[in-house]
Length: 86
Image (cartoon, rainbow, N blue to C red; front, side, top):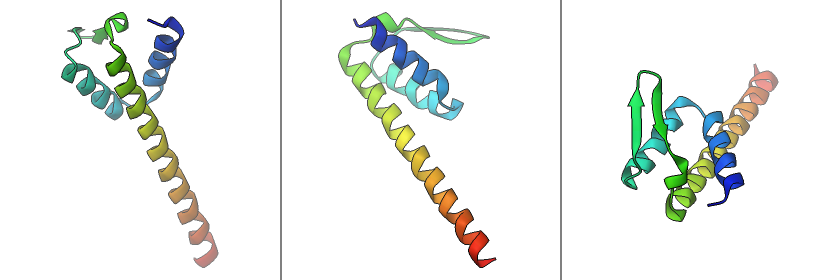
């Protein structure tokens, strides 16, 4: 297991909104990744991830980033039109 890849994945997951954390957690549950939970949150041993799980999470993170960029672009365009016409 590539430690740098896992660390980068962890950092990317920490940067996204909570609503997207739920999507990542669903991927983990679908891949039967063991986790523990307490009042502080859900804890996962990322060393237990297989390559398929990592790839699925990476693709999901990429999709999330693309969608957020598209949303920012649309909002920017909307604001430009608002200034020009109103």
